[in-house]
Image (tube, rainbow, N blue to C red; front, side, top):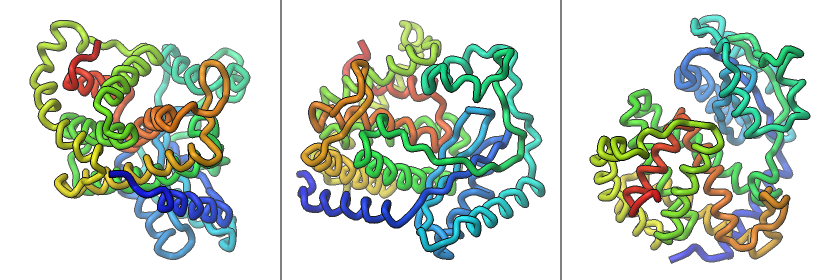
Length: 355
């Protein structure tokens, strides 16, 4: 079962209308401590209050590393609301929180820039380097416990162009809400619980976006694992024979969880799943339908190795978006790149082998 194209077309039209009447205002909050503390005690309550007061319609967050550990808060503001009024309120409330409850953890001091350089090379060009590194090649860091208004720069070629960006931003808002929901339930700071939750959300996202095609989903996770290991030089001891034996129980547990999730994604019927997964599945099924509709219309444009061009098929577009949307969802739950690679490998193993 798939969602009817008219529903997807109406959603895309609504997103365009929303985008035309609003602007995004972005704030970077530099904080050396655990992001979950800053989010749960300050940023999420503030953003919820902005929405409740009619100052904003929605928001999303991102955890990021550039210029030092920070959380990015992006709020969608109607054009009728004065920009400065939002700025003043956001700065006032965040600065008050940071003054009363500052992070006592210093910003990271790097003695070896290798990993930071790999992160930078993966997302920026050499032309950007002078902005973020000093003349001696040291990264520039912002002060701890500080908030700064920054431009919101859309990544058009990463998310498929104008229409793909709107689809992605809807996912950003929904995944921020999902992460907040899980934070309120507690225990996301327990790694085993975090990885268990993340593995289910990760798998269900890919299964929905890739139409419940088992072979395609398996190949996606093989590629997803290779992407992170190759791109960021993460060691992967779990791929060796000893590592596979150590995690055999995890793979068996995943193999038991996968069939009901795959079946739900293939039928777009999530009623049998727990509520937190069912809601997530329904949202991703809508996103999958929107991607298909966008491909039928103006198409979705991505940066490939041979340049920026239209995706050849809705499946190709879904594959590209699945990578970024899964990564950003895990980012909001504070799942590391190394753990994302681990999750992908275990899923591929559970589906028949990571090759």
